[in-house]
Image 1 (tube, rainbow, N blue to C red):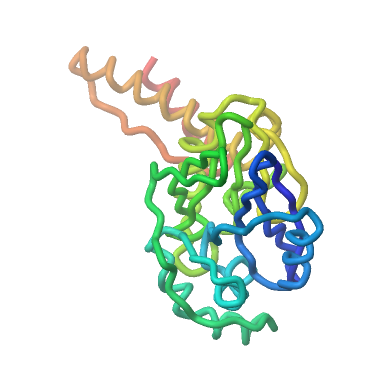
Image 2: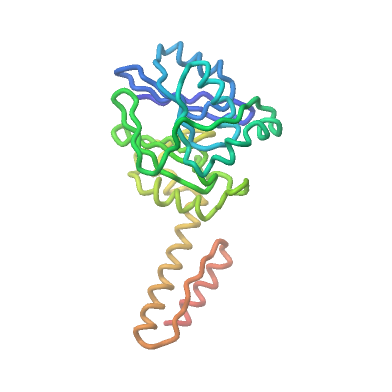
Length: 257
């Protein structure tokens, strides 16, 4: 199994091509622009394209999808149906960012837990909302890799300030569906270099802020349960996002001792 990243578009989106080394069957993931670059990879490696998969509906990931589908007679699979509003507006997105695009609907939407096959490879689909509501990621457990789209990057995470983005959903998706994997899984992000689950678990500042907050909240909840048992006034856990709020959490903990 191999994943070939080929940065495309003004946004340098990695547009990975995943292929089975035994059968040469391949899939395009997120062909957003610069189709000549992606097709040259296929020709150079003598690969056999099977279909197209989209992680989400932003222009740099989906802009050239319809053109590629028609050119090579390939089905489009994914993302999750919650991203239809983005696919319906690809032409508008393209006008905003200078990328030629066509609106389309995929041949099939993807749902959490589905399995895709390429040659002898199996890919697990996980729905990871936050960057967009319909974002999905692909995981191969045999070769220990994740194609993460714009959910997580090396030492960073995807934006959540675009239409229907949600930072809490994004961090929750990372925690449940990426950080639940072993440390040695390699992450192929939509932009930038590869990383690993273990490296991000140790160094990603956005995820580690979440972990600190979760530890505070878990401690407060535990103490609140003790107070309820002792017929004392219950204390609600705080949902914090800044270091300043940690002081408040500590103050609450001190009050219940």
